[in-house]
Image (cartoon, rainbow, N blue to C red):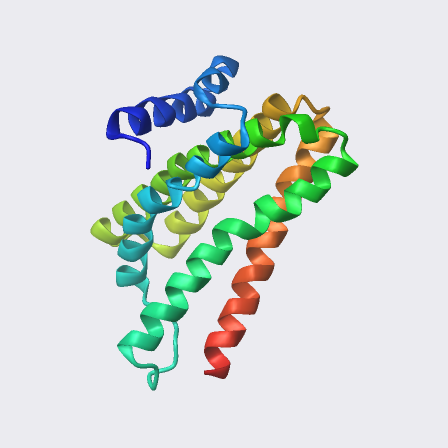
Length: 191
């Protein structure tokens, strides 16, 4: 596990990328080991996910036991973090950028912490202020567009891709996340 000092440096790089500073990539390693360590970002995001689940509920059937719910959600969360990188490994071959794959995944995982924090911060603010549905929708859409642009910048920069291919990477990310959520929600509903 990376030290808290290392995590702070890595998140600092992700924040620099959020400001569209290409030098934010300089803090991220380029090896398979660096990419593997970057999955500790899921541990950093987990408390945000638990807070979100507490605010909104998980939508699981009432007959699920606490143990079953915890096991199902833990597995769903872990698999959700793995699906895009696995798909991206193959897509990187198609895009002829596999030599940059580990650098991208390392940055991608730590950038996910910043993105989740932005969404969680906005959601918490809405919850605390009892914001209207209109305000939630508008500001949620603004943040979503920003995050998609941010993600495209990271893909384009880390993988050295043209804009169209970087957009395709973000579409793959978005689609795998949506499909996994749809699939896992279906499994939980089937009980």
